[in-house]
Length: 270
Image (cartoon, rainbow, N blue to C red; front, side, top):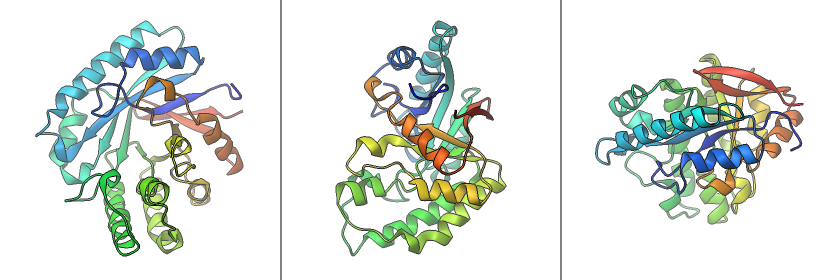
């Protein structure tokens, strides 16, 4: 690989409702690629936590990750994580999920607005898109202020479907102030953001967020950036990580972050 410390900090196993493969299979692929680290961040959709036995899925994920860490200890750093979805929509669920394990890494995500389905399932038109995005950035700011995460995941998530799948053109400049407020809150709380590379494999064809947000994060003083493939199958482990590192270099970063016990470990890009 082009870079020395290839690390994937956003991955899903069969313990996520939309994942397909065991943690061992994910680790086997990471090991075959001679990656430095792999963080398992299975889903915790907080608004569904108590109704859909998400607690059991998290416990399975943590158990599988612990076994994998022991098996791969001499060739891969296997880290325990969780993707905390919509924690502002059920704070009790979020806090219960976070009590289940001694996590290395917590991603904070917003996949759906209050009272709505995941953005994946919504229908988009020129009439409704901006009102949905208005609500998205407001709720994402609320999530940033809640501060239950180590890193804010895939900022601009709805664009995966609004721009990618529906083909609508969006003027994101109208959200510059809201995005700045989100980034400034993350920085004030000494937290990080993620370059999510899943869009490189999808119709949208770019990372979430794009390079403009990463550059702005650095301009505002942001120090911690992780990179994650958002893989839901073994074959996507590590996908796009080198592109994410290329972006960081272009933005002036010399190091990226991998979290261990909620502490960002700064690793040199080159």
